[in-house]
Every structure is written in structure tokens, then in C-alpha cells.
Image (tube, rainbow, N blue to C red):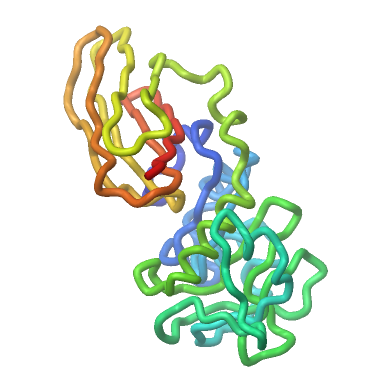
Length: 264
């Protein structure tokens, strides 16, 4: 997770998806064009959340950006493609007979868009011609709601994870030939404990974190200065539920990310 002040210095090559936070911008205001271009030029899939995504995509001049939408409040969506992958896997979601799916525990601000020529997945619950989940140019996805992940229902959480899985770049594409630390996780998949092994060719401050598929840091495994050498660090995953996570090793100059699967 990065603040907009850090964008220029971030190595985005190690990430399969960029998520624009709901609080990162408002209306026509989103950092600078230099920073939005820096993110866009990575050619990574981009998931924009709520107002921040609306402002960011507006900075890029997209149809899912400012000022193409309108503001509403709601807690549900009307599902347009119930058999689509984002509703069926990897987390199966039961769509009610009336196609109205509650994804937040209470009303939250949101941005909706008029009839779109882009790929649409859901519309705003009480406004038939206003769409709230759209993908443009097979790369830019807007999740129109502003609400915190903590306020998502179980269906909402599963939908978010499914969307991330659907639009993110293949892991092989970000890891291929880019492993500066000879980083390895064994065993992987893991049921409880595993070992993180890596090498340093120069002295550096090393940070190792575990994040979920939404990029939220769940645990810091290591955060200290180390000299050159080969290291094996134990990592305990017993407190995490079954699923897909990412272990990121970062120094002052380089970053590497590896997927880990928890199977229980």
C-alpha cells in the first residue's frame, strides 16, 4: 500500500494489479498528471475504487472517470451477468432470484455511470440505467462504491476477491526472470508454517510483509538491517484462512513478490 507521494519511486513491475484507493482523490482532483501517467504507463490492470477511482480515471480521460458519473448512496447491486466469472469463482456467490445482491452492511456513497459501451457487470440497485461496475478497454475496472472493505458483506468480500482474480495479470508475467534475491517459499502451498529463503549480495534494510489479494498488509515478518548472505526465515501462516496471499521482500533498491497458497 503506497501513498500518492511515493508513486514515482515505486517499482510496479513486481505487482500483478494496481488498486486505486477510494480516498486517493475527489472529483477532478487526483495527485498530478505525472503520477497518474506513471501508473498508467506500467500497462498493469487497474482497479479503481469509488471516488478515488473516479478521479484517477478522469485524469486519464476515460469514460469511467470524472465527470461521466453521478453520485448516489446504496448497499446493493443489480447483477447483470450472474454466470460471469466474477460471480462464480474462485468464490461462488449465490445470486438472489431478483438479481439484487447486497454487498455492504449499510448504505455507502457511490459513483454510477449512464448506459455504457464498455463491459458492464452490475448496475445500481434502484436506478435502472446507472451502472456501477464496469471494465473499460479490458484493463480499467471501476468498483463504484466508496465503502471500507470492513463494511463489506461476505458476498461483497467474495465479489471483490473474484474481481481481483479476474482482472489481475498472470503471476508468471510479473515473476518471470525477475527474482533478484533468489527468493523461495517452501513448502508452498502451506498449511501452517513455511520457510522464506533469500540471498543478499549487499547490505540492506530488509522488509518482508504478507498481504492479501487486495494489497492490505496483514503481517510484517521481518523489518531490519542485514549483511550479505543467505537467509532462511520461518513464517507462521496459521492465523490466516485458506486462500491466496502474497509475500513481498523489499530493500532500499529492489522489491520482489511471490504468491503463497494456504491450504487447510
